[in-house]
Image (cartoon, rainbow, N blue to C red; front, side, top):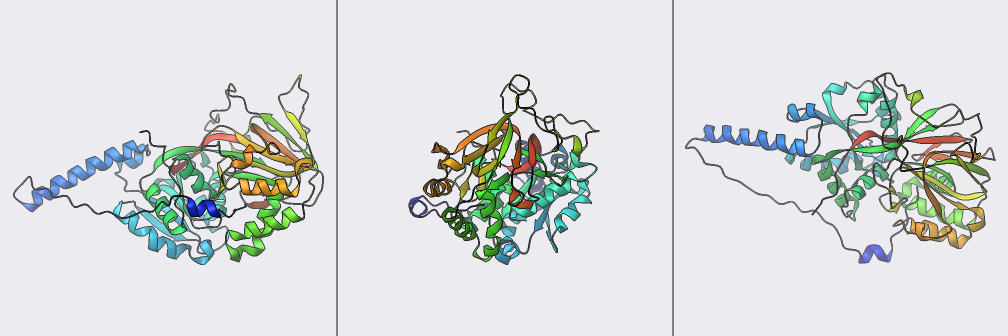
Amino acid sequence: MFVPSRGLSRILSPKRTFRRSEYVFAYGKYDNFDANQAEIICWHRQVTHAVYLRRNLPIDIVTTRGDKRALVLVNPAGGSGRAYRMIMEHVIGIWAEAEFNHQLLITEYAGHARDFVQSLDLNEWSGIVVASGDGLLYEVINGLFSRNDWQDSLKLPIGHLPCGSGNAFITSIVRHSKQPIADSMSQYLIQCAVLIATHQVLPFDMAVIDTCDGQRVFSLLSVEWAVIADVDCDSEKYRFLGGTRFTVEAIKRILRPRVYNGYIDYLPYEVTDDTVQSVQITPNTTTAQLHRHLLPLNEPIPIDSSTSKWRRIDGPFAYVLVTSKSALSKDTVSSPQSSLADGYLTLQFIRTRDSSRMNLAKMFIGLDDGTHFDYDFVEWMPVRAFRIVPSETDGNLMVDGEKVPYGPLQGEVLPSIARCMGKQPRID
């Protein structure tokens, strides 16, 4: 996922910093220490209970007074190998003072987080916090969906500490809260630690994705095809550069643009569609049944306007992106109009006929703040479901930054199916 350089705008923009303030309150209603302490404990319990209710926490957490812990999964390779140190330096102290109960687990191998959450005892935990980039989140989410009790597991709120090169999920959460995003990574980590410690439980949309090899995976961020997928995938060899790796690969792709032949079928989003606001799930629903509009990938989608609501966009394309969130990274706004639970996916694309080097450069620069939507050559629309069908057999398709087999791919929005640790915008 491309992370543009902010340049002059970053220098001139106001800085958001966090400073610790300490307040000491004295209580002396009674003449002896024990009686005062007992009343302080009672007040503390009642205030905490009220705060938990205000934060929309699950009732079992409220009634146990927060005794459950949050599972914190730390990827030691995140943040160029500095994730654990960053957590210890900037997060643990804040959580201790906020009485945010947690337990750290350092992942030891690829797939460890998925394996762990598959056998997790849900009754022991208040939520899951991922301290890494977006890749570990993808692993955790798909691990939860693979459980027999996946419906209950998705009730655990998911938190995200930005310790990777992308950090799209937490950035979308912070953008939803209307908070200005801290400039430096250390300040941003502090900002997110405070948000998690004082979080509200909010619903968020996801997408079910079917790939050409028969897999069904679950996306919480995006599907990429064409130049955006090539930048995301082929920049891996520059991972040592951090977020700059996306810029390096994007420049290469702008100078040597490629044509991507194929077509996109899509089901337009309609506000009056009664399937949009929630997923109809029963206790017997399986993950294989989590769709309403998708057909098997080997079956053509009817696009006759007299009998079907599906529509087709013929290529070739230069850029194709489908998102359920507003951000692709801390510094990349892919869908500026999106919130956490819109009930639709945002399909955006550039046709090859409009993909001059200048237009591609404008698009990538516009991703800095979402102004790429202001250009006529960037077409976008809200959709309920989609199918991408490349003509070639060689290329890149990415789901949440993870490469999937190249070929036909389809997806459908799952409105408000999961929960996250976030904040609603403050109403003055």
